[in-house]
Image (cartoon, rainbow, N blue to C red; front, top):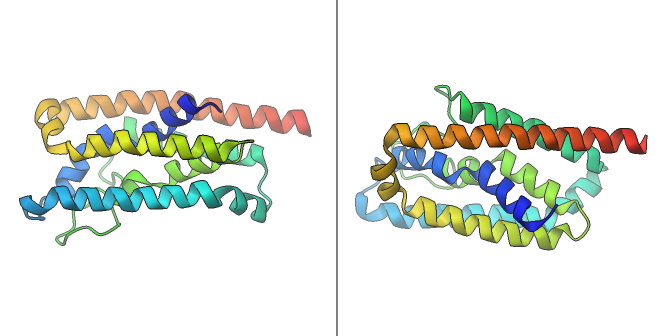
Length: 195
């Protein structure tokens, strides 16, 4: 997997534009002068979680004896489920329940930014030869784009409004469906080739 593909996958799973309204909603109870600091703190937590998976993901899969094909197929399934949720959001949107207190790690850092699909994607990227370096570069670039997007969440929300944000999220969901099916098919092909 090349760097650009890895960055694209991470951006689709982290879904910064789709998370803009959720961030705004979750941060409603937080005083306005604290919101930017909370967003920065939560995004730094997310980066820490993602980097931990870049460094430990390969050892985790090797230690558990998980084959490359299984990683690709299961990653495809998880991404497919996330994509369906993006295309047809229900009331149970990932982490959409706003808490009355200031959020801390949950739900902003995880599962919204560093969620299961993002972490599964990182494991998939790092399981390839030289994948740790690709994963590290992809995480840092995708996180930087996510950081810039979510720190600008109030301004983006004013421009896109609720409908525009939903339209962008659904478009990204369609792309993610295609990528997830391709990942699953790649894993299936590799499985039959080796067995």
